[in-house]
Image (cartoon, rainbow, N blue to C red; front, side):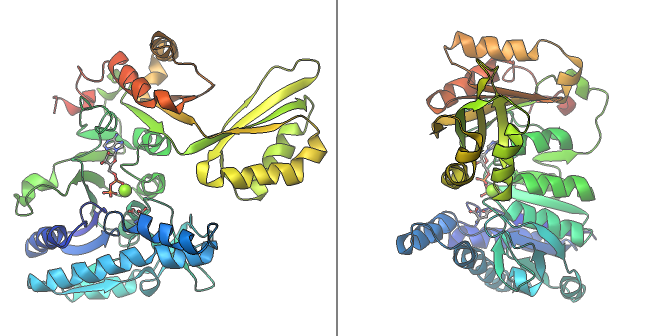
Length: 426
Ligand code: ADP
Ligand code: ASP
Ligand code: MG
């Protein structure tokens, strides 16, 4: 008997029929003798609908109230799933985040989980009940409902698994694992049987929405055995077969892994670029600009400063598109007078494309292959950033799909096994 956490995404919970399928799958695991905790998302489209509704009342909604509204989608899901399980003859109980409680900080819309109390859940499990906990939400120290950012149910599930010291966290979704790139963009993309934690962290942070980045961070910090797999198979599929399907995140590299130079291509359309033009090239300027952005609790991703001409330079950085207007306003209000400088210009028509692979550590020429592939397609690179296991470029967003396909092909991801650690092509 093991303690297992299942997470089901929006598509997997998308209709009464699908919810019944989820219940049947969970019932199968429960009947096999496992203690089961389930973390569902809101039904597909529901969170978008709730946010749009809020914006009909106020175009710039109060962040506390917006979380109050957005969190309700998951509350509906847990109730429906508990009823569906009871209909299958399985005792089940649903909880909202505050009832567990899942404690977070008070950063509405992007709250971080601080702790999860296991006691109540463990009591239910000991009594033989399946426990169903809302994804995406928690409660802050002031007792306010918070949400964890889009895609946050992944993080809820892995954090619950960590808090309960679960044996495994299974992330059920509408694809059957983690692919070399998004299979919706590149149909030739191939599933990996395993991916290293480091690569998954980079893929997620660079835009592969199959897992929210913080869920991968939790998996790494607490060594939660995490697997991504399909919820669209028949629910009565053989359990032993299901338990080893999909993609496992591994914490150790084996000796074959270094042969995989590039494991995947990630992309992100959620960023916007801001340039402060013709600022003086002197100590303290980066601090002045980015310090004020940080004070406003806005995350900065890529940063670039050009060579100065006549002591003046252009300073560019990217932020999430949701925070783009806020960042522009901060610069206008706090930075312009102090730095001097020329126009502050923004560009939302950008995207970031990244190649990820631990093999980059031991191989040269990856960056030049990437740049050549993009040049061959006539795609201009606006910004570049690298780390030990990734190269990212910012390009005009209309070239995104073309760039992803060209790079996927250019790095040979279609032909080779998706990951040499697979041992075999999937
Ligand atoms: P859920 O609602 O189950 O959380 P998401 O839509 O958040 O599902 O994540 C699954 C989607 O992630 C897939 O449908 C796929 O289009 C997308 N995706 C992006 N990159 C990848 C990748 N490298 N491998 C698999 N899926 C990916
Ligand atoms: N329902 C939330 C969202 O749509 C959380 C999730 O699906 O993971 O972002
Ligand atoms: Mg998701």
